[in-house]
Amino acid sequence: MPEIRNFSIIAHIDHGKSTLADRMIQKTGLVDERKFRDQLLDTMDIERERGITIKSQAITLPYVNDEGREFELNLIDTPGHVDFSYEVSRALASCEGVLLLVDASQGVEAQTLANLFAAMEHDLEIIPVINKIDLPSADIDRVKEQIEIDLGLDSDLAVLCSAKDGTGIEDVLKAITEHIPPPKGRTDQPLTALIFDAHYDPFRGTVVSCRIFSGKVRPGDTIRLMSSGATYKVEEVGIFRLSKEPKKSLSAGEVGYILAGIKTVSVIKIGDTITLDSNPAASPLPGFKEVKPVVFSSIYPVASDDYQSLVDALEKYKLNDAALVYQKDSSAALGIGFRCGFLGLLHLEIVQERLEREYSQSIIMTSPTVQYRFLLTNGETLTIDNPIYYPDPATIEKAFEPYIRASILTPERYMGAIMDLCTERRGIDSRFHCPTPGRLEIQFDMPLAEVIYDFYDRLKTVTQGYGSFDYDLLDHRENDLVKLDILLNGEKVDALAQIVHRDRARSRALVACERLKEEIPRHLFKIAIQGAIGGTIIARSTISPFRKDVTAKCYGGDITRKRKLLEKQKKGKKRMKMIGSVTIPQSAFVAILKSDSK
Image (cartoon, rainbow, N blue to C red):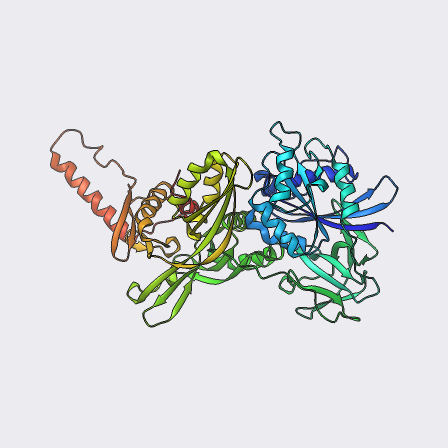
């Protein structure tokens, strides 16, 4: 019986997690050269296009060491971007240890620290791995110093490797078998299995990914979901190789999947405990902490007939991305839809793309916003995440918006550009810290609303990709907030409304009007696009109509003939404007989301 080790790879974005996972899969002989491709565990098209990991994927690697001992290494690959930290926390709950990957040229970065603390919370064994040692800019001694000082880990235990050319992969596998403890659960205890992921198979129902903590499950057993009490008969159990590999049973310590013909998607909750109906566990396993969304946006079907299809798609999507939070919503302009909460703007983009690609949904998304609080003159406190519910300005005593503490790690030479970027985004209370010579940690308190647009992209641009960013939510602070309405031919479009700081309202309105002018196609009548605060218009642009040359047939003759034809055309355009409606394409809603900074 092979020995089991459950581990995860955690790191800052772009430090080589997926490449290391690829090399380990190759080294353990799971895939031959003919079938191999880069980013083997990144199964989604979006992951390959963007070069990032979005979903944590599990795979069981067979490994035999020099002494002939057999091991089953259960790897749960994790994303690196801050927006997918919930995926990381779920992977960590299923492991006994982690490989903490650090780039030999860039060193310890913001997300490295955040992931380290998450691993420490779960009391996991941490093995530091220094990757990319083949790069000309690699500075191994400096990175070892950072591992000692910044992370508080023993740098003598650090494993050196280059995932790109395969150097040191054997050392990494040895370190896993030697330093990560085996799972503790016993097979003679009642079954407890933690659901850390799931996805919907149209032919076989919900495929549940779980870590067995104690007991044993085999086909034919009747399992019970402890949160809902629902029972199902197990059809198949197995482990994850490059595809699903059925087994006779799953025992304590193993990571695998359970198929039980679960067609009702809503009964599966990520973080729930599975037990046997005949011999149930006394209490469920501790699940995952509740996820707190920070960015909110509404999703509507393009055609109202597609509403039920969107409901089904969201239910199935929620199985695979437990960080998505949604509830019913409606809009005068767009009909019935859902108000959704996301962990960040990248998370929002990925949800939108996956709904369109994987579930064939045609959707419209509104401008993203954060949660604001308003103290009203009657003493009530109102919390809103949707500009539609902005209270009457006359009843507002004070307005508050959420602030974050942004931590930016960067080489010293980019300090000026980062200071400019943060102050432009209303950053205050800057603090500096030099973790190692040549590197600077800058902390700013800034409004979350200024960060959710494209702060991360701008930061990567001004630091040429070397800046790393992490943040913690602080509190709500008082500010002068107003509601910016967008009007098309005098009609308010509630889906385009935003809550903004008064000082930024005009610049935001000008950008919104210009972007809409570019995106909305020309009609047969003139379209006025206006930005307004209450009854005050603060920005405007106009889309010219298509115009037929009605005077083309006049050659020579009196000017009054031409004037008469032009006046007749003008009246027709005016009448058309009164009864015509402006069609807003999906791209216009997306264009509003983009920053006002090129």
